[in-house]
Amino acid sequence: MKKKLIAGNWKMNGSFAANEALVNGLLTNLGTPACEMALCVPSIYLAQMQALLVGSEIDLGAQDVSQHEGGAFTGEISGAMLKEFGVRYVLVGHSERRQYHFETDALVAAKAQRALACGVTPIVCVGETLTEREAGMTEEVVKRQLAAVIHANGHCISEIVVAYEPVWAIGTGKTASAEQAQQVHAVLRAQLKAASAQADRIHILYGGSMNAANAAQLLAQADIDGGLVGGASLKAPDFLSIIASAL
Ligand code: PGA
Image: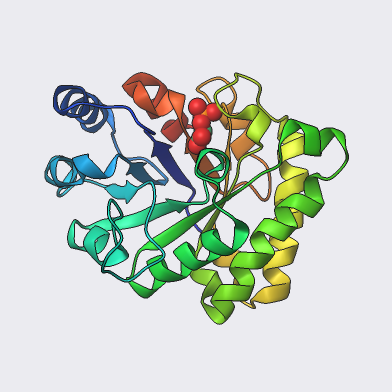
């Protein structure tokens, strides 16, 4: 059975001093966890984080990647550049980027494709808004978002990670119940299975107010293979406790 994956999403938080203190707090108390781990940090701190995490079991992640290979795209960061900093994972299509940066399904799919081409694993985020959930559109929305990525990536699809993050649960303290989350994860798993004979190896993470108190129950669900953790990944004891519940 594959190990679970717990990934922290620091979003736009951090400083040299805070990053060092947080990583030291994690590494000192990590023990021998049963899961895989990653930290998705602001790109400007990748060099610092690469040095802090070297030789540890925690992989390095970024939060976005350009869909372009290189060239005249001011402000963008390429997959090859991420790779040079030892980045293993990159978030693509986080709801904050879909919402505030108008990223479309097609763009997210192109970013996932670019990451894969550079040997970086995309963590493809999907999830419905509260309005969409209330309109009974949850399955339709997440399937549409994932279908774009499957369409663009063909047989490479078993190389991605998927994160189901209901938008209404992100940073709100409202978590999807374990049953609600499992229901959507099962839909995503079936969609991946229809696309790839190796779909069982794909991690499907849950994200959205995962914390030390609710992680164990969420992670016990059959199709929840880990977590994408925002707020709680900024506090070493909370993140460690989530890691410890990922058995
Ligand atoms: P949260 O964020 O854990 O703070 O809700 C999760 C995410 O946006 O990845």
